[in-house]
Length: 198
Ligand SMILES: O=C(O)CCC(=O)C(=O)O
Ligand SMILES: [Fe+2]
Image 1 (cartoon, protein in one colour):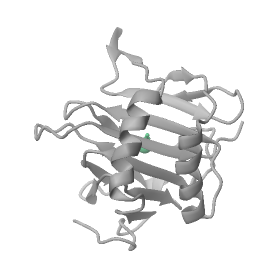
Image 2: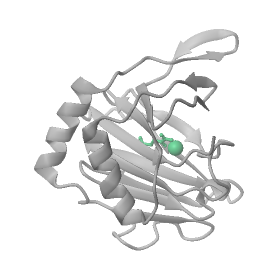
Image 3: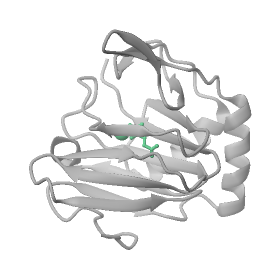
């Protein structure tokens, strides 16, 4: 199922809006390069069956204040927003009518980098959080899967300069992922802006 822009991407039980050309195309490639070089990327690890395994992507965590945030079992200590991140955040805030105080960045270096099925339902987020997701660089597929109705699936493409807004009951009812691909996409950086309650 491929959804056109500005309609709800989800058929029921949640609200997701996609703006494919939110950040201007050429400027977005420039943003990609700037983020690639200026963000303090780190390689997180996770324990799987007693073994430490690298995350299939690089990550970074920026926020106002100095509160820690636990994500996928990793405790993140925030770095203060850079002027560029603040600029990207403010544009997303205008579109959402909502303020964000933190940003999780993910750097997918190649098609082998990915993020598995999950919901953004950490206890530090609101019950029905508004999450704004900005993408720069290569296009990657982003999929939703309903938690109960196993055949309810939605697949969209997140291209350079796109903004995806997830809100309402989305995180209660749907999982999302960025699957691995053998199509050899170039590198991609995604920023999810969140409002964390400390
Ligand atoms: O890279 C993406 O588009 C998804 C990122 C994501 O789901 C997350 O950071 O929770
Ligand atoms: Fe997520």
